[in-house]
Image 1: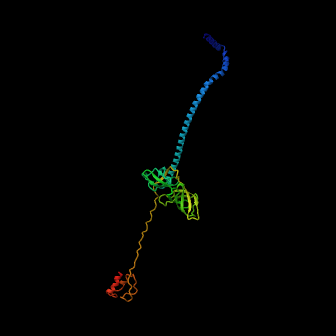
Image 2: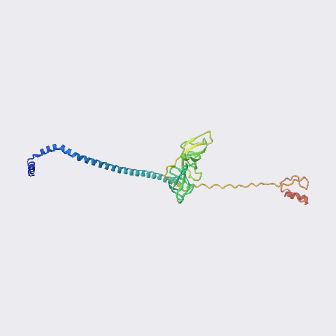
Image 3: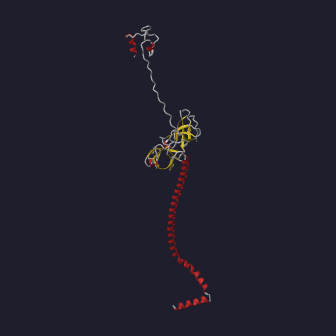
Length: 325
C-alpha cells in the first residue's frame, strides 16, 4: 500500500511539474475506449429497453388523450354547427314572423307520430299555450301543415303531404285556382281536377288562395315539378314538390288566428208558393132563375153582381148558393 501510494504521489508530481502524462493519458484512453464501450453495451441495452417500453406506454397514453380530446372537440364542433344552423333557422323564422299579418307562436318539434301510414308530427305547444284545432303551421319557406289534435301541453300537426290533407291554392304566375292534395309517403302534392289545357308550367310557384278561411293568402306552398297534359282525359295531372321543410324542421311557427273573411250574405228566404184553388160554381142555363149565361165557374163575385130584384128569395134560388159554399 505504501508502494502504490508513493507511485501515485510521484505521478501527481510528474504530471503537475513536468506535464508529461497527458500524452500517456490520451493513448491509454484511446486504447481502452473500445473496451469501455463493450462493457457499457449491456447497460445501454437494458436502459434502451426500459426507455422503449416507457415511451410506448407514454405514447399510447398520449394517443388516448388526443383521441378523447378529438372526440370532445368533434362533439363541440357538431354542437356549434347545430347551434349555428338552429340560430340561422330561428332568424329566418323571426324574419318570416315579422312579415306575417297575423299573430304567431314559436313551437319545437318533439317527435314524429307513431302511425307510419300518416304524415304527422308532435309539437311542444298545447291548449295551455292557446293552441286550438285548425290552426295553420308554417316555417320560413312556406306552409307545413295544420293542427288536427290538441292536448294540454302538446299538439298534433298533420303535414301538408298527408293523404287526408287538402288546401286551396293558386298559381303565382297567372292566379289559376286549384286544390292541392297530399300524396302520402311520396312527400309530394297533386293538383287535381285541372283542365288538360290549363296554363300550368314546370317551376310555377303555388301559393295559398285564402278561400278556405284557414291559411292566409299568399303563403308559399309548392313548386310544380311535373305536368301531364293528357288530352284524352277529362283532367290533367300536376305534381308539385313542397317548398317548406316538411321532414327536416326542428322549430315551426303556429299562426294563432285565421284570416278574417267578410261575412256571408244572408240566405234568401224561401217563399212558399200559395196555390189558389178556384171555387167551383154550378153553371146555370140562360134565362133560368135570372142568371145570365156569361157566368163562369170560380167567379165568386157573380152572385153579388146579380141584383136582389132579379133573383127571387125562394128556396129554389137559395139552393145553388148553398152548393157553391
